[in-house]
Length: 475
Length: 95
Image (cartoon, rainbow over all chains, first blue to last red; front, side, top):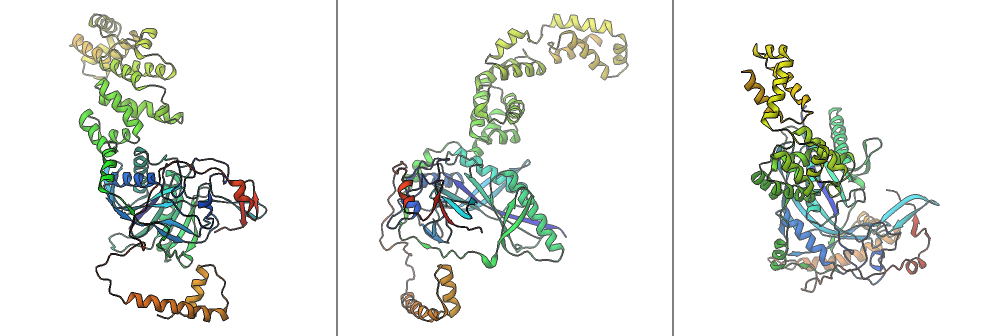
């Protein structure tokens, strides 16, 4: 049977505020356990939550970027469950009236664009951390993370493969870091993904029974977990079994998902409006002020790069994978007026090197200015692509400008017609056999001759010119 | 509506309150009285009235994102039953 995969994602985006959502306690990462846990996070009797304005502003920013509706009246609710890293016995979240509803995100899968609908995004507080290892058979609780503001971004079940799910997660990750509302650090848990996965016979309207994979904190695990889960569900159904609704965990060591709890033990959260918090009201003026302060978004910038600089849609998508990369490209492309060359170098050589050295564009040893120097010399034919590569290597290793490197290493491409003609004539004289073959119609023989000329010029002759002059002389 | 024995047991479990079989009847009766009151309120016609999330019709005041709390771990942990290496210790829980 042919199966169709249906995936929806819930992403917990940790907002990069200085303080917690309901208290003035610092959210800085990596502090000693429980040194950033105040009476509010510890749920001491009599304390009340006091809402952080920055959380609302950042949620609105995301809502606008997702082209969603901002609910000007939204309400906090209590989600009730008992766990030691949640001392209150409930998480403050939003249920019926979330701040953001009905958005969309355009993703690129291979070369194809696809729109994924975003159901909602709501504000909530994070829980603390439970450490289960090695405390005389007890569990250790660190409440530093408790009360850290989160936006839970929920998609519609619009994705049809693991690749689409990863593309969606990556696009959302780019967007929240681009907007400056999340640091995007997945190792530290700033961006965590839950995946709802089901399969159904191709053509069937109703969804199959879904299982939810919890807490995936890397794109690789997200892809592995979904692929494993899809195969497991298909195998189960094809063997005549049934998929039961459940929550599962992904084990990166075995590459498998395993059941955490079944539907029977599913939580009954008994949501109700939190009487400690009044409704949040957002004025139209506040929304407009935030809109006016929005950066150009990756989608718009991508389209502009294609129009203004003539780069391909694929290149433009890579260039807008982070705001820093986009800004770097734009600086180089505008100053050099060589959009395609700039895109090729940034997406090619620079991306490969950064990747190899585990750096991001912010740590690129070649500044935009020095890259412009290189590209200008390629565009004006001072450098062949081979020489350009040599200059690039030297740029990476030193602080010199491209011109200084060309001067120092004598790398100027020879475009002087007289000099090239002389070398061409010598090559023709020295290789009568190749000349004969070419004249007999063997096109390849020309490359052999051109190779000889390039060798004689120590790689500095302009290759296009060499070809042209060779053809002239041999015709 | 009237709560059954099972309903009461389930609510008690969700609330992590220990209620034995003898107590369930008495607790159930009290809960049923409360539900009776709720039923009376639900009988009121509220068509076209927007539900309120809070009895007072005012909006939430927001604070600026500025650190105002200092580290008081020592004071908080002085009243905790058991601590180690800065962590609160609780009976082992693994879900």
